[in-house]
Amino acid sequence: MKQQRTYIIALCAFFILGMAPADNSMAVGVYQNFDELPVTGANEIPGDGGGWRYSSHITYTKYNFFGSCGWWNTKAYTDHPEYEDFFKLYKNTYNNPHMGYESFAFLEIDDVNAVRGHSLKATITGGKKDDGSGGVETHGLSLFTKEEYLTYINNGQNPVDSSEKVGNARLYLMNESYNHENYPIPAAIGANKLSYYVYLPQGLSNISGND
Image 1 (cartoon, rainbow, N blue to C red):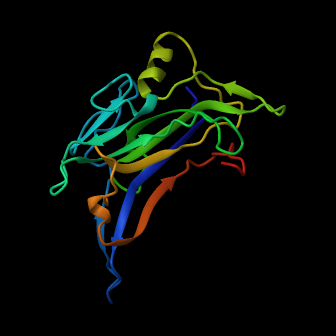
Image 2: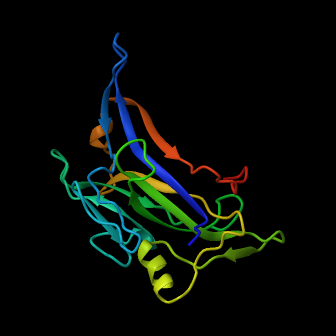
């Protein structure tokens, strides 16, 4: 089945620590490279690995991610056990030109399109956009998880609308404590640069200047 857009977020979040020495090598702290997470099969929901657990409002292991999906880290911080890391699909429901429009999408793990190893794959199946008269029009069926996508497919429904330029990938990588205080992600402590890699499939032509 043709899906509207697929983004590969590969080897996400390399924190570069310090300056490059003479041999041009660098000390790199890696927040997440996804290699320890299992590849998601076509009819599977994402799995757990490397201390990260998949969660959603359907497959609930700790977070409902406000109705979307993502992974949270079960490994407590050494000196701040009240903190946790997670990355998630951001569910934007503002639906206005200033804050953006809702995207119908889901996350999974891929091993075909990556810098190396595994990558985080975001598939956008539809979304909402300005109808040209100040209102909002909807393209495709509402979904924010792989579980919802599979439910549509198993029920004989096609949730994908590939006729319109709607939707874009919005991902959050962050940490949080029970009291919401600020504390650096361990891999970022002492870092002065964040690098990540995004792969856009060849032939991806339905991207507007606003995406």
